[in-house]
Image (cartoon, rainbow, N blue to C red; front, side, top):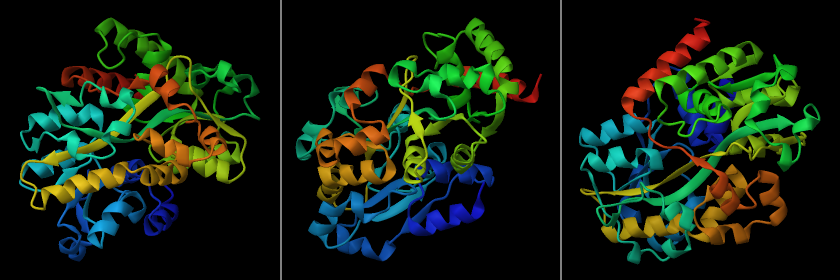
Length: 374
C-alpha cells in the first residue's frame, strides 16, 4: 500500500470507499466508525447517514444543504459486516448505505423500516434494472433505494495488448492468457478472483457453485497462478503497475479508469463477453432514527438529484441510479469512463449476489489452497 498516497487522498477527500476498505484490511482493521461534522447535525435536520468513506462530501447532497443550511451528520464505516454489527449493538443513525447483496441480511436484522417511495421526487427516474433488483423489495414494501453503482472488470493497456482492444475483443480470458504471463494481476478476494474464474469456466451461478464446479474453477486458478504478477489488495498498486508497464491487465474498479486516463495513458476498461461484474449500493432507513423523518427523505432525494449523480459520475467514475444524471455529463466523458450505455451494462452485467455461508467457506478454503500452491 502506498501510505503517502493514501494519506494525501484521504486529506483531499478523494479516497473512494473501496480504497478505504482495502486499506483498512491491509492495516489489520475491520472497520472505522467515526462521526463527521458532529456539530452541524442539529442545524441540518439532525439527520445522520452511516456511509462509506468518500461520500461525506457536499457535492452529493447539495439540495439538502440548501434546504437545511448545512450538511447532514456522517458516520463512516469501512466494511459492511462490521457496520451491521455496530447497528446491532445499538448505534442508531437515520440512514445507512449498504450494497444490494447485503440488504437481505440487514433487513432481517429487524432494524430497518420500509421506505415510502411516493415521498421521493426522484425515485421515478431510477433505472428500472436497479429498482427491480430482487433485494430492493420484500413483503410488498421497498426497503432499499439504489443510489450508486459500478463495475469490476479488466483494465488494460491497449498499446501492450492490442489484440484485446475494441469491444468485440473484450474478455476476462486476458487474465488467463499465457502470452502475458508475469504481467497480470487480480483482486485478492473470493468475490474477485474466484468469481472471475467461474465466469471464464462458464459456471451458470458463480455465487452458488457445486462441489464439482468449485473443483473445475480451482484447476483454472491453479493454471493462472504462475501467470500473475501478484494478487492485489490496494488498487493503487494496480494503477502504478499499469502506468509503469509492469502490468498489462488487471481486475480493477471504475475509479482507476479515471485516474489513469487523467495521466494520458492508453487504457481501456472492458465490458467482457462473459459478463461485467456489477455492484449496486443504496440507502436504507432505520426504524429508530433519532432525526426528523422528513429530513431523512430529503437527504435521499438530494443524493438522487441529477446534479449529485453527475458529480459522482464525473469525479468517481461510478454510475448514479438516476438516469437523468447521465444527461448532465458529456457523451465523450461517459465513453471515456466506459459507462455511456448503462442499460447495455445492466443487460450484460453479472450483479453481485450473496454467497451462501457454507459455500463461501468452501470458496475461501479453495482460494487459500491455490495461493499457497497446495
